[in-house]
Image 1 (cartoon, rainbow, N blue to C red):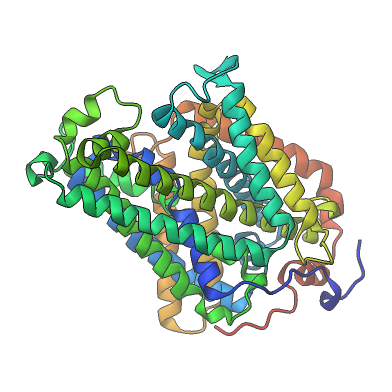
Image 2 (cartoon, rainbow, N blue to C red):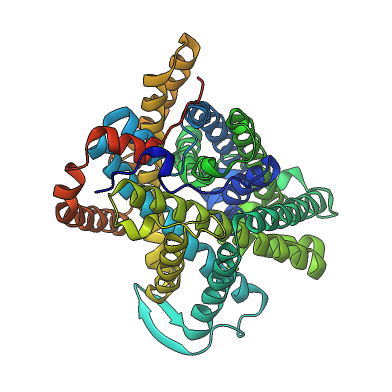
Length: 473
């Protein structure tokens, strides 16, 4: 147990500018799913239903982001939801929140890395599907795909090892290319010679009510917009006032919603969307862009996808490492995780662990990773809920308390949509099994550290997790 005062606790270096932090959030919100999943979105809700669900999800996230903005101003520390759960409900709730979020953030890194193989199957089907190894849950694992994912993880890991300033600059560049690619492809498809509003009919998915489709899209908002909450994870490294955090998150959410809607509508405007979804194309959006803009359009779209993949890997690599660093600094994880690289001011060992776990995951096959990410939406929603409860507890004005209460209600609603049988977003059985396994592992891990963790005095744990924060609400 450490007897160091808060002023001597390991601290990350302040080096990130507002544009870098905003790019971090937007680059994480717009992952490969924006380009790979529009066919699923159309099938779930239809063009108008999908757009409405995405838009409502953005509004809900803005409300929740208000609570994040308040908490970042008050406690600008690494760990974000882990620290907020501790502030709101104590050390044991911090364990629950931190454990659920850890797997959620970690799993998104290899999920993005393996998405390169999905893109490769469309652009060059035979290039990476070589070296068959085995099959997991019906998904064939190839050495070429694993190698491609490993290359992406190692490349990003090397970037992080060199310091956070380079990470921020790289994120700005990649996100700029991403936004430009989405704009070019969307405008080209929507104004192309084959574009027709008639192709969006029926506006809602047949066979279900319009609201069912909209709610199904709303239910996955914690997954669609996961990434804006990576911004608070970097709060300890802001080289600017933390009061700007909410505006940056709001811009990232709204820009992300616009990009999601643009790609969905561009996918469905070129050909009748029901025929497109019912086809045998490996990549529905790619097929639509190819039909409208030809090979050049597919090339631009592919560049945008690669940028989305790398911005996601980069952002969640940071978020995962900062969360585990905070948990290590608190004593919940071994102190090894709380080690700082003195030369660069980065969480050296947490970065190493993030890279190692991300290199291991692709060997289990993409289908297993998808199960884990699906259940990670529960952890994300729990993080939202704890943050809003914490914001309610520290708010000094009635409006702030009202916003926090509404955010908590919305967060609880997401959990209902995901966890109550019969709800549109109810998770599939494999995701429940993955969630149960992770919770069981967490219980075993916590039992092994419970005595040591409980022995840390409250004042010392306050200093470890919350530091000497003096934010203003």
